[in-house]
Length: 166
Image (cartoon, rainbow, N blue to C red):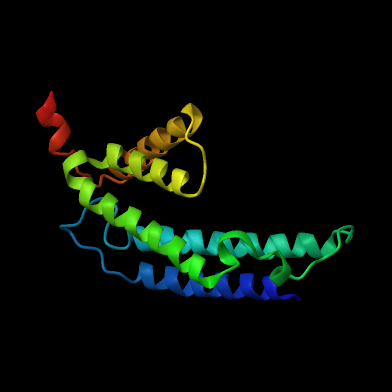
């Protein structure tokens, strides 16, 4: 058993404990359809799925013939992470973008703010913003809105700035 297989098993065990704890959250008669334990339960199952995926991937990689030379991961580190100071500055930039998103969320509304967040993160990572990338940012924002607002019934900010313009 290699490290990835062991980590996959550990993650699945932690997920099992997390799911068990989520199921122990009491159900309130005043709660909504999802309940207080709904989101933790979904997160627990996603964690279990990630652990199972890691275990299966390690198992398949172990059984596959080794045709590619294995390199040390330390040799592959480069780019933004070659210099630790540069990595910290890149992370600080992402935090700054997230902070601007938080301040823009209420006035712009959820969908425009998330679309701008996704576009800004793409641009910050060096992706040239073409129409396809903008469609992905807008589509991602709409998918997240549909998941949370329509699917889970979580009320998201409509925005105060844009409705006042029309």
